[in-house]
Figure 1 (cartoon, rainbow, N blue to C red):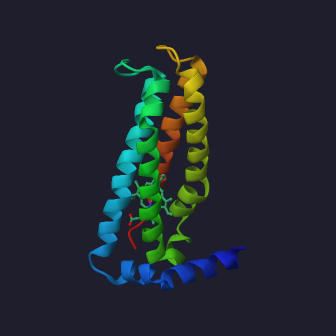
Figure 2: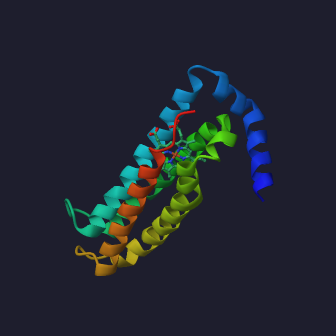
Length: 161
Ligand code: HEM
């Protein structure tokens, strides 16, 4: 299993996009910008719904309405995050994969937070139908906030290779 992962990383580093991202002076920072722009949209739309579930901020819409309204932007942001992250990873995949912070982030925290996010997005329609969110919704929103904070904390520990 580990050998297959190492072989995959070597292959990624040798792809045209892996080589270009590694050798170009400006491409890596430009792709960082893509990753971070996607993150801005993804995290902002997640946090807005989580705070509404918690009952913090304006209450012009219910949590269910807000979640539905932001749905498309939310997943567009995520696609941009994954595209940028994948390209950054391709530049020096073999090194990233040995970094503990990267492993914790991508191997554990991102899958966990993502599954939780999908559950919250589905359940927001039930928990967030009234102006006052149900207690389960509040707890779920708080949990999601904490999970994304954990992902960001692990991510900032990843060095720039
Ligand atoms: C949606 C979840 C994600 C979040 C919240 C996230 C967050 C971040 C943040 C905040 C950084 C900046 C670290 C810093 O420079 O201090 C970062 C860097 C990075 N991310 Fe992500 N990321 C996510 C998904 C991904 C995915 C799916 C991949 C790969 C397929 C990825 C690959 C990377 C790589 C390789 C870096 C290092 C870039 C660098 O700082 O040089 N990320 N991420």
